[in-house]
Image (cartoon, rainbow, N blue to C red; front, side, top):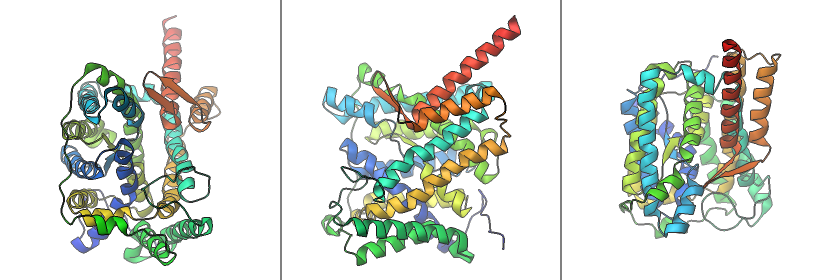
Length: 426
């Protein structure tokens, strides 16, 4: 029996939408709260502004792009540098505001000159490789969370250290197995919530094995407003943050193309890359002024859509509203934060793998001819730059993984384009 596809504009009944929205919320929650924890700010403000930013994004894109905006990790390194040099997170916030205006400016550039330049800067062979690297680059983190790779410090929420490796593997592999089997075998409504079902099942298994720490729930208040923080402007601090903008631009374009392929629509044209950039930019300007960290489209949520075939923007909006509510309900957000690391590791192994496969899907659908030396070299160098573990430091920003792959792929594409132009002139 063919799996039902829930279209971008399809609105489901409330009691069907609620678990689907919760599914998206749990998929993005780990990364969204981890980023502010690393920077020493209140995770609730990130949750509030992610939800608010997602609603703004949906409005600007006319409800045409199913994307959730979560906390960006591309700004972690330069932000830590600013905090260290200037003594406070407030000095980094103007850099986030600059990032938002940069995206707004780029939206006008795209609207004026179109998206033809993207095929020059990021042709299908580079785009496919970068998308695949996004999943492959994230996979080691999932493996560490799942207990399949060593980690000096557990990656994820702050809880007790892992006590028994056996229990970690039982939880992570059970969660993964339930997610995999559910994605293939479930029928009816269960067919569209395999990720949520796997996370809940993993949580219950963890609870039975004594791997859940209830302390954060008991300590949390029922109602608590997020902590807002005003920016302190300094041009040097802005310049330290600025280079990360290009990395997130490449990520944004890649995510939009992948989402378009998954949903079977040309989102780059309708509602358009310019609207997508504008919505993300406005969201980040607000985040910078309120004391949150920058937002970006989230690969985890793209993976959920690829598995469930639920593309409804209404479901994404529901997740955003839940995020806003949970940012003010301390015990609910604390309860979600107690989801054990191995549970998230198990499910993200599946989600990140799906993202990597979407990159390979781009090669097939765009009919990339690897018998051509140009395509073979572009794909090979982009892949190697992303998965080799190479790292390059440029000023305040560290390029590795997806960021390095995108930078190398774009640079090489422009070099080849310049050679083509020279041959035409001569």
